[in-house]
Amino acid sequence: METIIILVFVVGYLAITLEHNLKIDKLIPALVMMAVCWALVALNVDQFSNWFDSAKHALVEGFPSLLHADKMHLVEETLLHHLGKTAEILVFLLGAMTIVEIIDYFDGFSTIKGYVKTKSKKRILWIFSFLAFTLSAIIDNLTATIVLISILQKIITKRDDRIWFAGLIIIAANAGGAWSPIGDVTTTMLWIGKKVTAWKLIEYIFIPSLLCMLVPSLIASFLPAFKGDIEENPSEADSKPKSKYSAIMLYLGLGAIVFVPIFKTITHLPPYVGMMLSLGIVATFAEIYSRTKFSMTSYDSEESEANAHHSPVHHSLSKIEMPSILFFLGILMSVAALESLGILFNFASTLKETVPMMGTELHHEGVSDMVVLLLGVGSAVIDNVPLVAASLGMFHQPIDDELWHFIAFSAGTGGSMLIIGSAAGVVAMGMEKIDFFWYLKKISWLALVGFMVGSFAFMFLRQF
Image 1: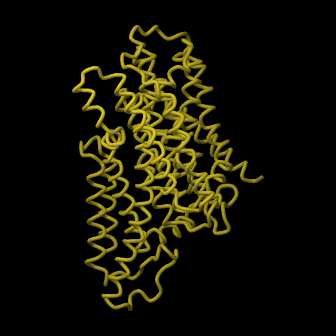
Image 2 (image 1 turned 90 degrees about the horizontal axis):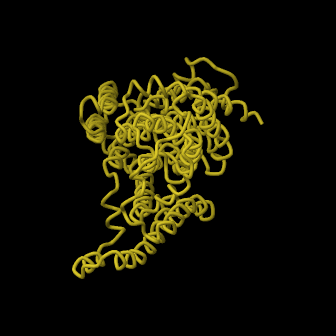
């Protein structure tokens, strides 16, 4: 029966990976896979020889001899445990996404466009690389990519020029998201899962991530695509009137998100609590400012009255990517089913025994660097979320062990090597209609160089 459950997971995984070929949203196979896996567990609970207690990180002793009712009770408790851990991540993401949408509601990100004063392609490359690296650490790499490509479309008219910048933005955004606990879904999972702390994550990964961004950008700045100046964009002036509160809401929203790790450090409460507090504060100012915004922009009395009752929070919530939230629910709970049967535990033991050592061991249990590098390469082919979710069940090193930080870097930046390997790449692909093979030929080698430089930098710096 364990084989059948693994087969269901593999088939679901393939459907997620081949989303664009099958033309089926990845949330569908993720949710079906989750339901089928847990249904098979419940219907065949008496046939399993192992049960892994995730709360204690150990196999349940004497599981085969337990009564059916006791086994079902254990299944329900385990399911509730995993649902609680998954809900922490999802509520956190919902709060962060809502704050970002509130900033956008006030056209806050247009403030960033004012920083670009040059027409030099090389200077624009460096400006957007640093913006992507910094912004992704605060509002996550997916959102940072959307914001910066939207700004790029207003500055650069020629698509052939723009897609080169988009490629480097993907690399920089993924590198920036890797060193921040709120910069990527995978680092958020590790942070909420109590595998890393915010400050140690920054300490371990900031320099490797910075090199992962700097080296590809430096190499790219010598390529012909980034020589010369961009053409003047006649429609550069945005037709949409800019709210007088746009800059205030930008800084307030970003500050509120940055406050979350500080709140956790002070109170030791889960991150989603701090995110809800930040959302409440930002939403309060949004409601107050929205009345002034609409009273200034609405001249028709009937329109003004309608807008007066329009909540920016409701508007922002309606724009949240709910398919992404449901996808995370499906994939995390599916991986939890494999973990509960002890499959991931046994797989980790096999990996540690068969994969050869490369350099220094990460821990006294002997997890090879090669295993983590393979996770990074794997995240370029398939989604990094299930890979990190699987690693949470496979390895049981203590909080802030070097292994967790290396996994955070490897899974976060490895996805840049293929355009389908990260959420930032997929959204850029959609926004600019970037061809898979064009990216593979022009950008992938830059991402690989950055990934390897950052990985070797991590291995070197951990010795001190």
